[in-house]
Image (cartoon, rainbow, N blue to C red):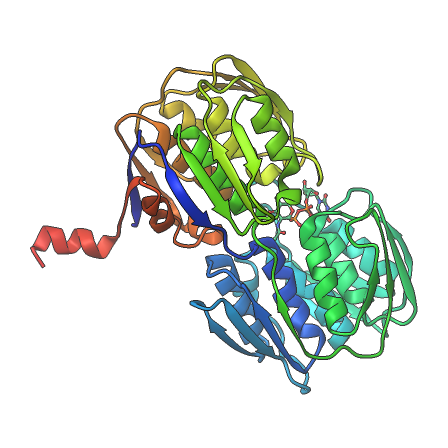
Length: 430
Ligand code: UD1
C-alpha cells in the first residue's frame, strides 16, 4: 500500500506550474469518438482517470497513442463500427458515462453500466437520459446497464432541471451529429464546457453559447480530425494556491486562467490572505497572518466549486474564528472531516452544513483519503500540521493530481512517497 509521509510546518515558497484540466480532458477524449479521423489532444494530464478513459476507448477498438511526458494524445477511432464497451472498465469511473452521447450519435446503440452510488453520493444520470430521449433515443435498464437505441438523433429543445456538468456534455456531444438544431436551456456554464465546445467546433461542429445557460447546437452530418490543446486545471491551481496559504508560505502558481478562480480568490481575500494576478496566466498566493473565518456555500459555476470545498475546509480548520461551509452539489461530500478532526480540527456536521471552529494548530496523524478532493484536503492539512502525517488511500489522489508530491517537494515541502516495494526493500535490506 503506497503512503505519503508528510512532515508539516514548512512554508511553501517558489513557482509551480499547473497541468492540463482533468475535467476538460475526460469529455474531450470521449468526444474524439465522434469522428473516425485522427484527433490530437495536447496538455493531457497524466492521471489515473485519464488512463482509465484511454483504456475505455481502447476497449472499443480505438487506436490511442499517449505520450504522458509531452501530454500529447492521439486518437483514431476509424470507420469500422466501434466495439461494445467493457462493463468492468466503464463501471470503475463515473466519467466513463461520457461515452454515451458520442456512441449513440455514431453507433445508434449502446449498452453502458449505470454508474450507480459512489463515494460522494448517489449521483444519478436521469438528466443525461432525459435529454438524449428528447432527441429520439430510447433507453431501458437491463441487468444494471443502460441500453440505448435510436433510429437517428434529431435536434430538440431541452431544459435541464439542474445544470449538470456531465448531462450538458453528453447532450452537447450527441447533438453535434443530430439532424437539426438542439437548444439546451439551464446548461452548466463551467469552463470545461466551453473547452469541450471549442474542441467540438474545431472538429467542424456548430456549438454557440457554451459558457452561458443557453447552448445552441446545429447538427452536422460528420465531424473531422483536429489538433487541440486543453485548458489548465482550475481545481489543481486552486489546491496549490491553498497549499501556499495554509503553510504560511508565498507561491506563484503558473499556467492558470485567473478568470476561472474568481470565487476562490474572493473567499481567500475575505479570509485575509493575499491573492493576486501576476501576469496573464499566473497568480500569487501568500498568507497574511491568521486566516479569518468565513462562511461559504458551494454552487454551480461561477459559484464556489464543490471540488475546492474540502481543501478550503482544511484552511478554515486553522482560522481564527468559527466559519461554516454549506455543500449544495453533492449530498455526501464531507467524508474528509473525519481525517481533519483526527488531526485536531473541530468540525461538526449539521445536515449539509459543516461548522468549522478554527484551531491555532493541527497535529499530524495517520489518515485515510476518502475520495479525490478529500485526499487533497488531508494532504494540505498535513503540510500545515505539526509532526508527521501518514496519508493512505493514494489511489484517490492519483485520480486527479499528477506527481503532486514531487511538485510540493520542489516548493520546500517535506513529503515522501513510500511505496510497498521500497518498504519491502528496507525490511529485507534489498
Ligand atoms: C462534474 C465533475 C466533478 C464536479 C461536478 C460538479 C467531471 C469529470 N467531473 O461531475 O469533478 O464535482 O461536475 O461540479 O467533470 N445529477 C442528477 N442527475 C443527473 C446528473 C447529475 O441529479 O443526471 C446531480 C448529481 O447527483 C449531483 C449534481 O447533479 O448531485 C451535480 O452533478 P454533475 O454536475 O452532473 O457532476 P458530474 O458531471 O458528475
